[in-house]
Length: 149
Image 1 (cartoon, rainbow, N blue to C red):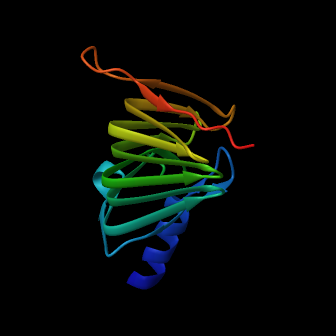
Image 2: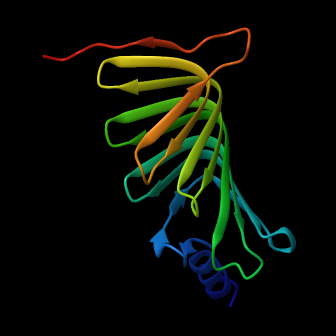
């Protein structure tokens, strides 16, 4: 009985009905807080949705009241994100699957081919393949761009 409920809950939780996408998440531990519509994955977390992969120490999935749509995903600790040829490392991540935007905060490192960008924050519009990088007032965005011939 519990196993059937658990499998049904996970299926409902991880199917984003607005975009008909699936998110697969693997971790050492899963804590479900139904009253708050939150699932907390911890320990060696790996999540994949289409061509977006996220690794972290902890990943928190928040669903809507009906638990049929994911509202937001937050990740903390040892963040690594890979999408196609783009790789991003950071301290915290917020993913909005409805707007299809990824927000990475902290000491952010962006790698594409052999080029590197260092900043404090990056906003990636996954639908339009655009990014905005910024840093605190006392820091600046630093880029090393290498052309491959």
